Image 1 (cartoon, rainbow, N blue to C red):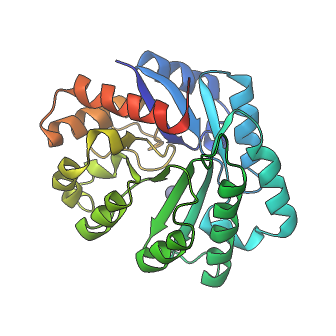
Image 2: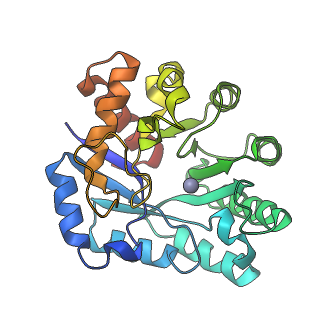
Length: 267
Ligand SMILES: [Zn+2]
């Protein structure tokens, strides 16, 4: 079984002391490739450096998360575009809107989101826009409105760490976007609705991710004492996901891996 983690925050400082061991454990658990999330001006260059140090295994995104939208200056935009020109940077993002925490003012979030989508359009390869790795929380209407401005000009899009409602899910699927599922699925308090919703995601639109070090699946037993999530737990997430979809785990895993390779062009 070959798995691909499309969202691992491996530049996070909680991995500084044992990053190579984390990668070895992931490999042993069947995680063949990982996309390292770039989520800030500080960490996106580090995501690229990690990918370059592990060619063919690690890839990176380059972007600024809505929490950091206030730092999205013209210089930052130029830095992100320079990162996005590298082959190892396979998507723009993560970018989007987060009105749940509002760590950056909403107008700044919208502006940073629009500028990053414009980068994805401008950096098109062979006529197809660079893939976009999207974050949306409690901002669905504004998120859809901004994406609408770019309709017909963007390449493939994934709404990562989907935790939303049935209506939101179908809005995304109607646009032919991909859906990233994390261990949120395993949260009996907040994620129960996902158990049924994941059955509605077509196999060629479904991708899997840990969002490590965040979102340790609550059903991992025994839970590690430090509560840090790791890419090796992707194997646990796909098993839970397959059960909810009424599929063999190999079926879910194979489809997610194929969808991921096509989406990010990991050949
Ligand atoms: Zn996110």
